[in-house]
Length: 290
Image (tube, rainbow, N blue to C red; front, side, top):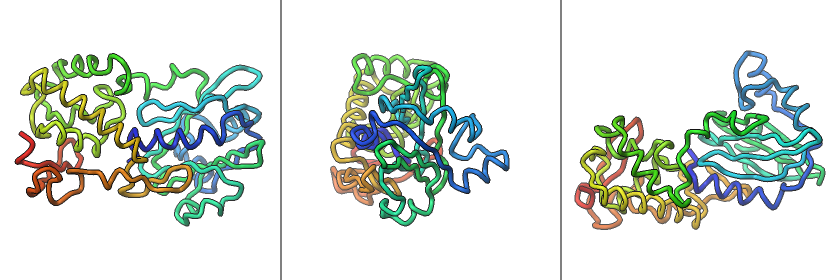
């Protein structure tokens, strides 16, 4: 699943290509149509396809923002601003091309689902192989409940203190620290990959309960997680499965991993252990991480 660095790269790739463009047409794949006809929320959530079309055709794409793993498209028309809040799910990707075949990656060509025709003649295409992604059209961002409870961005002022405050809550005290840091109410945008890397950098076992950590440990961990996420942005995100940026390119962060997906620890060279924590496969070094 794309995490904060990957989604940030998608945002950065889209911004110069589609900001200021007017949406002049909307097309949905047969899969989206058949899903909606069957009463399923396939990609387009919380609204019928015709209403989605009518509300965005003629709108200008004013801004593309990101909140944790969500992309937020600010649209503007004669009635004011409205928003598309989008999550990439497990395998979603956006492309800006003249023709569908220009994507150049067969899986993404075969699994396109939403096409927004732009005034420039280009098309903004959303493809999703596993169809766990979503697009929601909202009149107010306050209605996006999925992003209202998310912690501050890890690079924002005050995010570290917020992290410490959240870890003081009773509900986390006996939970493994790995479970806590993957929760977006604690730290924004940190999923399984960067949680493993951050815990390794802080030399903290993912099995440690939150209550067992001193305040200094928690501060060290926050900074290690933020650094891992920042490094992920610097290296274009990690492409361990199907992630592609707007140009159809893979990221390079996976070449920087010290622990995630490794057999030997990138720090001490010892064997890497694995465990399932909060339903996710966890990699850690029993020598380096205590």
